[in-house]
Length: 171
Image 1 (tube, rainbow, N blue to C red):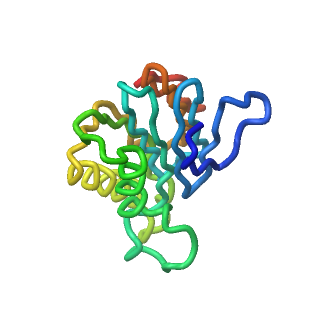
Image 2: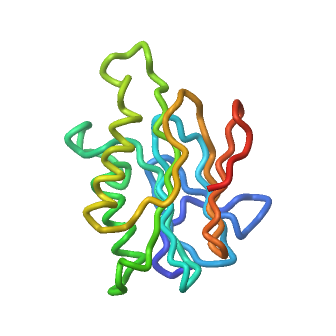
C-alpha cells in the first residue's frame, strides 16, 4: 500500500484487499486489490497506471457539492474525488499513462423524482471530470436498476463487477 493512500479499511479475511467505503477513495499498488461494495446509483471509478501497477478507486455518491449540503466528506462528489485521485496517483507523471474503468450509476430511486436520475448524473459527471483530465474510460458497466460490487486488481488492471442479478462481468 502507498504511504499516501486513504484506505477505507482492509478486508478481514484478506489483508491485501482494501475496502473503499461509500464516499471514499483509496490508492494502492500491486499486490493489493481495491474493492468497493454497494454501488447503486453511486459510481465506482478505477484509474490504473499500468507501468507502476498501481491505481486508485473512488466510490462517488453525487455529481458535485451543488447537489447536496457541503458538510461531510468532500470525496463523495465526482467533481472533487476524480481530480483528487488523479493528482494523488499522478504525482507529476504524464496523465497519458492512465486509463479508467467505471461501474454503477443505476436508477435505484424510481419513485423519487429528485433522485430518479442521480445515477445517470453521476456517470455523466465522472466522465466529464475524466475527460477534462484526458483520462480515457476504456470500459464500463453502468446504468440499469441493480446494485454492483467492483473489484480492481492492480497487477493487470482487471476490474471484476459482481451483481446479484447479472453475475460476474470482467472489464
